[in-house]
Image (cartoon, rainbow, N blue to C red; front, top):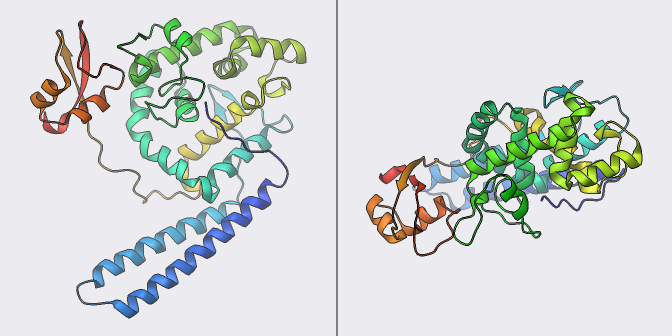
Length: 339
């Protein structure tokens, strides 16, 4: 799970503004230093290289200027569509919670997170959206994976949750993922996405008495904290909206506002100081399927496809064996570049 560890208080806006201003000043000073160095050491062979360096730093300065300007713009739209319904911004504090997380992510010290997500989004969101469409789930569910794992398919939490959807051992097995000493499909992003859809739909049905929108909100809260804790909070607070509960764990109370903030930023990065012309990530290597019916060592497979052992193991992190493919029928993912 994401561990934000940030104390939510009224001083956050002022602190964010101070950090932004300081970061901008440092970049301006850095630009001046580079400019002076260029003037002193410039030669015919390095002119073009130095110009490119200056241009890159100038772009970074402009990007930070945009980020600073964001603090004077409205962070929250008049209405927010989420999981097929409208977020109840009329409830006191809901906008403040979403605003807090937007400011958290656009602050200079955390901007790298959004850049990372924008880099990974083109690779993972088309896969997820295809599954969501087949399983009749809102594409907004993709931002749950961003919040859970930052789209890191091999991450392991301190509590032992694994993969892009952060399944625990029990929840993964309950949703038909193979988990044993040889295979751990929590690291198989496509299969884990199907399992996440099954888990969310099961939770949504459990809370269906609260209506089409709130049932999904309670399902998301249940995905984070477990449905038992959610029911306990509902009964204790005697409320029928996730956004009015006061007895949820702090992380779960902020879970959905954080996901909504991620959706707003990643769907419209320009509004929050990230420009379209920025290049997010390098070239992506396509993976193709290859069926294996008998044991083959990693070295044999690597030699067959002209790639390194590390590459093929990394592309198939759900197979835990260090020797090779165990007995059975498996579909491997092979980097296509040298196929």
